[in-house]
Length: 175
Image (tube, rainbow, N blue to C red; front, top):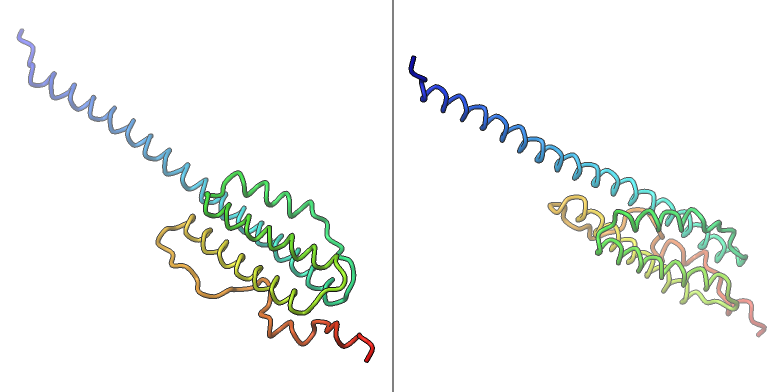
């Protein structure tokens, strides 16, 4: 009895194609799962960092306006920064570093005496600019098709909203 080679070859070809398809599907599926895992973790970490930033900024602004020492627990802020270092792109990490520098300058300003309204305005502008840069870098790292925002949502208020409450050191000087 003759072996039907056409049948053997077509069967072997079908088996080989199936095996290659399963392996390729596994690789592609695994890559997709990894990308989704990274994106989900980035999203959660970026959100945590922004929550901690807002908490720090509000306490520093409140302390400045009340002319008192701040009551910050820096542990959550530092934990958010360390977590960020695990998943952030270089651009996001650079934006976080810039924002961290502005937070540090604000903490120094709150601790210093005397302080001026102009210093508060400058630090608030640096915080707002840093927050917007971080948000835009984070948005791009999550989805390259997202256009950058041209405005800030949340975070440090515009100077016009803080300025009426900012202490005027000149008002306390004797005439």
